[in-house]
Length: 155
Image 1 (tube, rainbow, N blue to C red):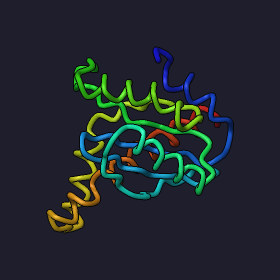
Image 2: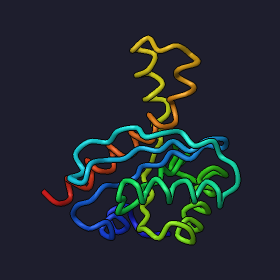
Image 3: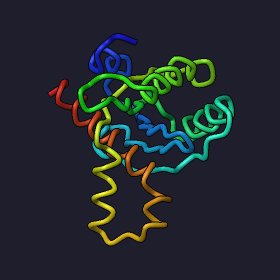
Image 4: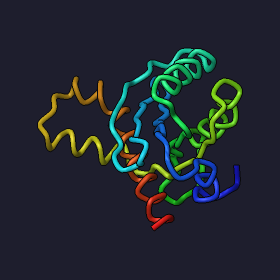
């Protein structure tokens, strides 16, 4: 996938709910936006098992929520280079269509987890509660940034 985010996002069409995913080593944070693509909200945190099981859970959620596309946070290094986590994310994005046949776009997610951690601390959320919610909150942050960008392209 060497296309830009904007080129990838063109495959989503003009409306329809989208998923935002924050892929961690142990979990996948999942967020969804409304069909008008105005607001992203957290859905759940999936405990990672094997790729096929993870993808099947995403496919079940996508069917339930009539998802039309998937935005996956791409964890670039601060200098925009790609490390092992970014390569792992790209591999997940390449394999996902085998189970979930939807268009996929990769969104630069630098600092999304840091930003959500800061927000949760500001809300005086306990460390245990933060650990439980951080991935789906990061997915929400990723998705909101991406849908704001998509809306900016069409206005």
